[in-house]
Each structure stands twice: as structure tokens, then as C-alpha cells.
Length: 153
Image (cartoon, rainbow, N blue to C red; front, side):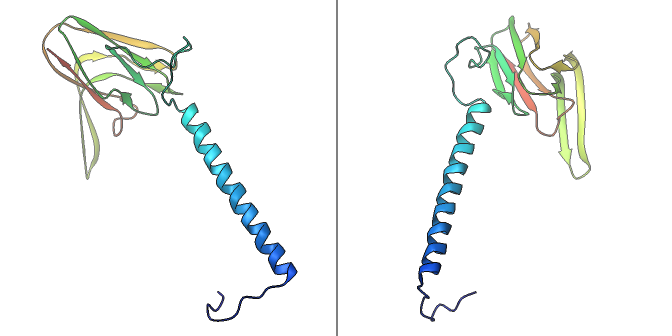
């Protein structure tokens, strides 16, 4: 650590070192901004669709992306079919029921209304909700983070 009361040493070599340090910091900042922009684009930022699967979900569609259901909560009319579209790498499930999370960990409580089984990337699962009510669901692979709910009116 330098003494803040000591005069700053100014020599051509020190000035050159400081200028190089400023350039490196500036380059690092530009690199971070570029990385954030690329990551945001790759992770599904807002996009107008050109048919390549990056479209915003339709009214009765839930996407599985970034280990989350999007939207997490959906309201539909009785008789509507909801489609879950798997866009993450790996697999997910859509399993009806609830999850309790506490000091003892995560406890899954499926209610056997519907269960997709494992859904691979690019695949979908559909379920028709004929009765009004509230239908919570979760991913059996990621129950601590992936939960959603369909409300049927």
C-alpha cells in the first residue's frame, strides 16, 4: 500500500505503466459489457420470432428455460390445453403437485393429476384442463427452483 501523503512518483516509466493499466481496465470493461450482451442474447432476451423457436410463449404455452417455468403462473379457461415447451439443455418434468422446502430439504408431493415424464430439449408436453381450479406443478428434477401454477376459470 502506498502512503497517501507521499508525493506521487512521476517518471516516464511510471507514467507508461499507469497508461497501460488504464488501457487494460478499459479493455476489461469493454470485454465485460460484450460478454453480458452475448450472454443475454444467448439466454433468450426479448426477441421477435422468425420461426426458429425463440418466440414469446402463446397464451396457453409455458416455456422451460434457464431452469424456470415461464410464465410461472398461467390462467386459462376450462377446456383449454396448455403446452409446456422444453428449451433448456438436459431434461425437465411437468409434475402436478406441490413442493415443501424447509430445514430438512425439499419434499415433493405429487398429486397424480398429470405427469409428463422426462421432457428432452425441443420436446413438448400438453395437458387439457377441463375443471376449474388451481393446479400447482413442479419439475421433479429441479423441485427447489422450478415450480408453477395453472389457474382454470
